[in-house]
Length: 202
Image (tube, rainbow, N blue to C red):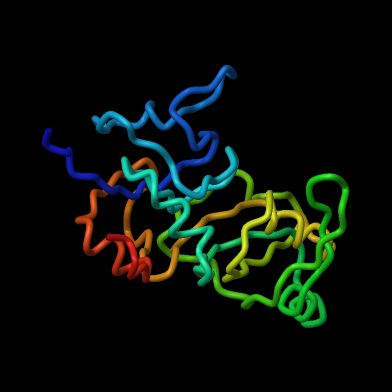
């Protein structure tokens, strides 16, 4: 019996689409993308329905454990648009650890992470969520190594801001680049693991 080689893809997940191929709800699905995915494909490290950006799809079921449950945490970077101006003391809170509620109503203090104010990314198409009449907004670049449920949204909310738009741009050196919303890119296996900085995948 010949084993079928595993395949690896990244997509630029558009908003209003869940990170799965099947759902009992009336929602946008990965299968709606204009691409013929292989059998056995699934998403790794999901993004919620409103979030956008880099999502990994693969037929290799080991990737979840290697990427998110290994001893070495992997960096994930996001562009985050929030309402109002962000003060320096707020940036400090986000960088050093802030309390959020996680499953079971438990308060969890986030690990230190990288947060900086950035100009609006020029490559990003406009989105209605960014425009609130008379309300300024700020773009942040946040890089963290943990991924609690809705973590970034909860972090900025606790800090006094509403998350208006959230785009994952990279996981380690695996980057979204200029992939358009809804676009799909296949990546060769060795390159995939090299960019994710995973050495023990064979």
